[in-house]
Amino acid sequence: MWTSYMLQGIVVLLFLMGAFNNLLQTEMAVEGAVEFGYPEDSVLYLGIILFVSTVLYAIPKTTFIGGLLLTAWLGGAVATHIIHNDPVTGILFPVIFGILVWVSIWLRNEKLRALC
Image 1 (cartoon, one colour):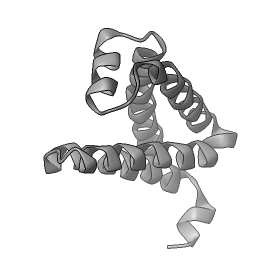
Image 2: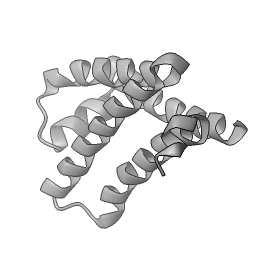
Image 3: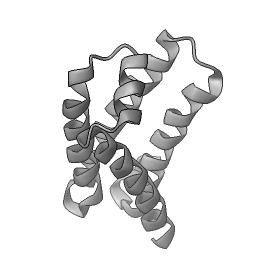
């Protein structure tokens, strides 16, 4: 149980940092988005989506839907890195975070563990 909470806490903290960077439209967030081909004015909307998804993941009753939304977010990150021919490490980072999202849910959810 503690392991799942620690994994979830790490994931939530990192996603919240990214969401707040986008919500505050920091120079780093805007430059990063533009560099990857996203319009500058989309940074705020991306921050809202990431923030809502992360909060849903952090709330025990909505962890599953939050996990699904964060998985979709990370899938978009993988696609963006592939389109820009980034090194494998750039592609693996969101994949590893996606695994951590679901491992933390799997450790706590008996129904999900029963599927394996």
